[in-house]
Image (tube, rainbow, N blue to C red):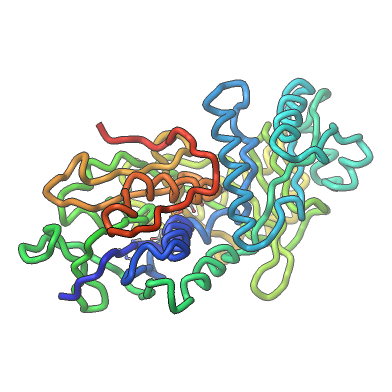
Length: 404
Ligand SMILES: Cc1cc2nc3c(=O)[nH]c(=O)nc-3n(C[C@H](O)[C@H](O)[C@H](O)COP(=O)(O)OP(=O)(O)OC[C@H]3O[C@@H](n4cnc5c(N)ncnc54)[C@H](O)[C@@H]3O)c2cc1C
């Protein structure tokens, strides 16, 4: 059995950002990050962009704070790649002028003074095109405005984080494989980890396994303490079929999201976000239910093209329905709303110490969740490091859910 200071399980944004921060601070001399290509990864199957947070209800204190965190930490993620959050913009549609001004004021106060007006009809038409701008779905009073939402190229952020771990001084090795946990009398914390036939004894274990989290923890019998659930989402990827010229369109009335991205071949694609994410009662179901069904596809079409939404898209979408490759099914893991979740085993399974189970809730919040996790894990103290973790953002009261 090989002893390692720390192991991170996960190949998504939470694992990558956490390991990036740890590597940057030189926290561990010898650490391992394990990710599986075969298991579901929300971070590469989502709609690619990281919203500014304006989807939250700004009239509540909690909603305002979540939105603020998304802006700050979404910016952080962009800065990691030396990209600016204002490079591209999105358009948002809301039902009233009052709602539009509330959001515009909020984004001005949070560092985006350039997005300071409601768009005039001609500009809406130019940016959204006729498919969306002329939809009967927008009643009188609908307002459109620009947002700092930033679409990411697919997998771009994860690739960046992965690269940042390649530096010889980072202390991290990376392996691909499907890790399993088991109880162990001889391992330091009472559990060991097997991957690709090798057994490891981690000093600290960070489980950032998304929808597979509970299944991974089951052999220790502690999965029932992790209070998370998942929503099943069906997304459609289509070669550009609308005249949308903004990179991103978030319609807060139909909850439709469309973003324009470039795929690996450099071709432009439209990603249509499902408007009906369904709650998955049993998380293990998500592990087997990963293919798009005929029922999913017809619901998707019926929903998007219902008379009050975008019926004009129907004839162009139907030919794309046949090919399952145009669809993906993925799972959004949540705890309370979209908030990050961090469960330290010290609270519920003291017999298995040093396990930290975490997810960002929203990709935008991965940096924030990673910082809170480092504080909670007291990593600088436990590893005897002289140099403390330097937090570059003002410290917030954590939003994560502490297991009682
Ligand atoms: C349709 C959709 C749209 C979304 N839109 C947005 C958005 O616009 N903005 C936003 O901020 N967020 C959005 N999200 C949420 C965001 O994508 C997720 O919150 C985030 O990606 C979760 O990251 P994660 O690292 O926790 O999990 P994941 O990305 O799911 O990563 C988990 C990783 O763990 C690995 N793993 C699991 N078990 C094992 C094992 N036993 N051994 C080895 N590896 C293992 C898996 O292979 C996977 O790579 C969206 C999600 C969905 C589904």
